[in-house]
Image (cartoon, rainbow, N blue to C red; front, side, top):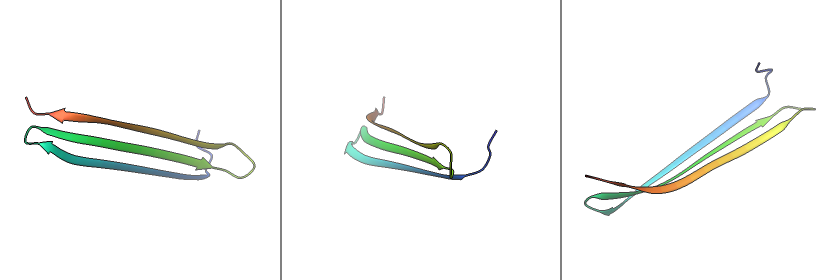
Length: 54
């Protein structure tokens, strides 16, 4: 059950062209939950890769 607190979430995506068939992708997700006198929870996900047109 969500008992309140302050939640924040940031998502960032970066796409760049490598050539006419390929994109480079970098992404980041950051989540933070803060409650006074309680648990402070922060986590991050990040990744990178390429998309290629078939």
